[in-house]
Each structure stands twice: as C-alpha cells, then as structure tokens.
Length: 228
Image 1 (cartoon, rainbow, N blue to C red):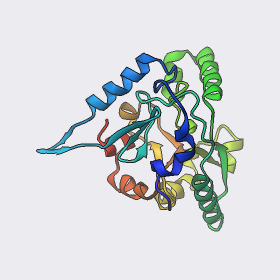
Image 2 (cartoon, rainbow, N blue to C red):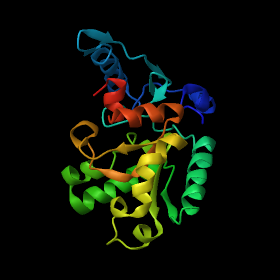
Image 3 (cartoon, rainbow, N blue to C red):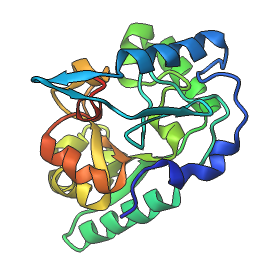
Image 4 (tube, helix red, strand yellow):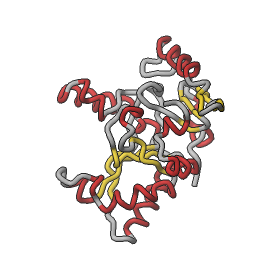
C-alpha cells in the first residue's frame, strides 16, 4: 500500500498560489498561519506531541498526511484528479468483497472546487445553510477535491434510497477491513462534534499505511493527528 504523503502528489505542487484557501486571498493565508500556531503543540498527559505541520502551495500536510476539513482549506485551483493508488485500492477492495458475495458500487470520487461549489449551493438552497453544513463541505473544504476520497455504496443502497449503506452487509465487512486497503471511514459515528459532519459510513479516505493505526486507535483523523 502507498502512504498518502507529499510525494504522491508532486505533480500538483507546481501550482503557483498566492494564499491557501477558497479565495486565495490574504485572509485565508492568515487562517493557515493561525492553524499552524494553534496546533503546533498538543498535550497528551504530561508529554508534548508536536505535529509536523507543513503548508506547501496552499495544501496542508500534518505528519505527511494531506488534511482538509472545515478549518483547513485547499486552493480553488487544486485539481489533482482521483489518485492512481486510490483507484487501485478501492477496485481491489471491491473485487475482494465480490468474492464474498458483496456488491459494491462507486458513488462519487474526485470533485473540482467548482463542482463542489455548485453542489453545496444547491444543498443550501434546498435545506438552508445550517443544515447543509452538517452533510456537505463548502467549496475548497471537500475531501473529494484531494483526489484521495471516494463515496461507496452497495448496489441496493445506491439504487434504493430507503436502504442505508450503514445497515448493509457491504458496510459490515468494509468497516473492519478498509484499513487493509489504505482507507479509513473519514466521518465516523460519535465523532460529529470533532469532524463537524454527520456520520457518513460511505465516505472513505485513502491515507495508505497509516490507515491501520488510525483504525486501531478508534479515533477520527483529527484526533489521531492531534489537531482536534
């Protein structure tokens, strides 16, 4: 398995970016500075854990893992496409699941900033901003823009909205093996107050070899990296 590190995204690091946010203006650049200051030191008991935080051309890495969430943005022109290691990993997982009689489908993968903007605005128009913010990322804050996240479903849940993926045999298997393919369930149940999003069993994020440690910890990615 590959690890989701800076070396895997070198082609996109040639972007020339003035700041590092959805507007790429000075305010977003300052926001990144605030992030680095706020999370430079996290205390665990009496020990100090110092996350290695690096911002390269507006893209934030914590301990070599690309991070984007409600507080940490991506540049609007960050456009890597779905990463090859992610394609290889989810396809292998689907094949292994099929051997067990499971029927996985890919529901959503890479999204551009512009597509996420349209999607988010549609949700806001339909449900209001407060509700939309619980289940949809604002443009520049979507994991799908990293090219490292996919939404998956079962054939039943993808075609029948009355079937919840979290209640399917596919998810019962995936939740305990996704890390073997380099994935974590990015928005786990019970961590909504940390991730800022509702529980999403279908949204899996590729982080490579580190996935096993995150899975074993039972923590969200923010908790695991010490930036919660």
